[in-house]
Image (cartoon, rainbow, N blue to C red; front, side, top):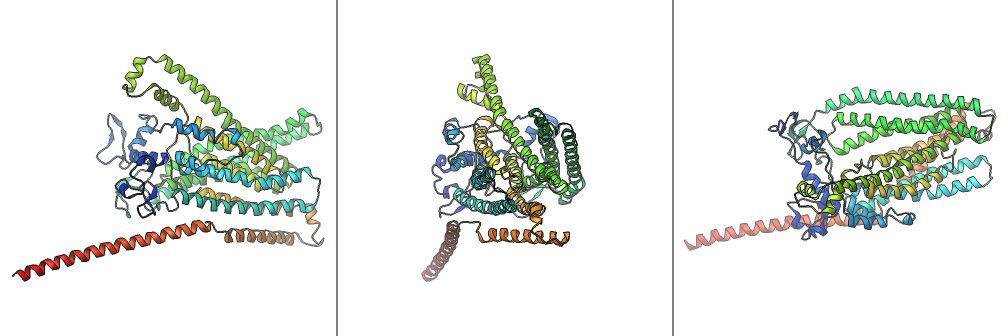
Length: 593
């Protein structure tokens, strides 16, 4: 199964099957019936369906490379560099039209062509860009209020509290509104009811002894669950814990360097000394990125070793590993300043420095560097084609490919692989944390995030069109585990902001002078619970699916039920007529005698 639904003859969405293709609406013309993304999906499905059996102990011609039963042969070829890469080439004509209305800065404040992105790149990538655009628009209200707070001189104990409460409620409204928009997109693209994981085929790199799926009855690799659990708790958990300790000591090293800089340069307020004072924070932001990159490779190896059966399970476990470490690595210093040192001035400057530095580094790494490398690769390919004789090119391509396509293939072969949406979502997740976890300390965080995201949309779009190879399309009905991750951050934001407000000396003056510290904590815990109750009430009373989508889904279900009833009735009628015909023949024979 390919997790691909198309409109059936009865008007309902059904799982697409090659063998049942004639019964789907519009299947007479496959060019218009299937999107570019769906055509890729079918091709990839067929490629990865070629798996080793017990009769294939090794790769032909490579006696030392063992093939495990059920393992994808193509993936094995790639892992041993026998086959370097498999990728679909870009459609230059379509991509030129898409890029003209997508990544050019003159369209920076226009809506993205989400449906065209989905048609070309598939659901998963289109959903990421839809989320990024929706999140960017949602940053406008907190950014505008943050600017007002910055330019006005209103000093009050209520200032931080009002802004924090607004941000917390707004974060909830944003996440609920996104779920509704996500439901609209899923319905529009026919991915609302994608296949259950019980019927999902094993991922290409999953290995094990050949067995049978208890649901479908098809042969597939089987791997004992206890082995995966033992690997997770015996190796993965200790390794991740070790890296969390590394992150903690990196943070302590940063504060040690910052203390040395403060001691030596704090008294002299020259521009040079001010720059030196912020240098440890900039270095720390760079180190955070380096450590995150190293840990990512470790986490990927651990995830591969755990041998998850389903791609969805593999992705979710990898996301959890990255979120856990990156959250600690990026935010531990902020929690240390906020709740151990309890220095709001330092928290504000430290948060601003971390957010801005990481965004500047990210823009350089994601926009400028890929563009430079792309131009360099293009020149190298042009020089290579000039040096290659016409005879050599004809022999290499068997005289079946024109020069333009040869150049395109050579150019795209030198491009980088697109590693998926994980890094992009992780970047937005961390930014969401910087904006909302400590919103009372730095109201301008939303402004910086908004400015970054306006360019982020265009730079990511440019990379998809010009820098990366075209990825195979993937099916998705939502943003998966990232929805829960953002919701958890919004819950944590309530706790952290209530705690920050509770530690404000001006707020403490409102309380009776004879109140005990325990009672003070209880009061702010009560306030926090009230805000959480409001937050959960808002989330509960806002339906995840718009009314019109619910009506359409109900109508589809009703029509499907009617069609099924009609099929059964027709089958029953046909069977009854057949019985009647047989009885008539028998009676005719008896009468003739």
